[in-house]
Image (cartoon, rainbow, N blue to C red):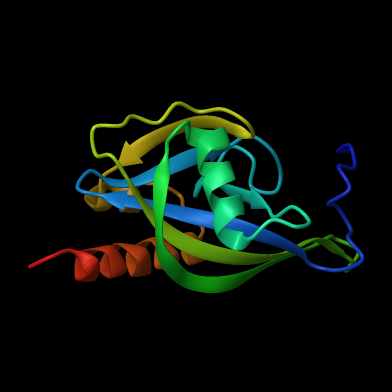
Length: 152
């Protein structure tokens, strides 16, 4: 049995902020250290705090989980992550606001906070990871937005 962190069986959805850090090296991923999906690769991110803007939450989570300083590029999409328990109740319900960001391309992530690992992953290596389908979709959308934002 897992210890209740206050996020299990919530009375309403929790707003989470995810960040796709993109660049020439691909994307920065973290290995999740806590449920849901503990041990799986994902985007840096976490719960938005009361009084905190989405962009401020994104920058805080990037720093906590990767040690990187980033610049937010913009909104990618909003995703619902709903995990039912075996008895039919909702164990987890997150409304995830995903943004994309850039960092100095020489910067190397150092995991911390809720992350058990953090690293750059080439876009051609994403298929080798067991990513949630929504995470893969968000990464591809963010990468396209980043490419479109670059000067020609």
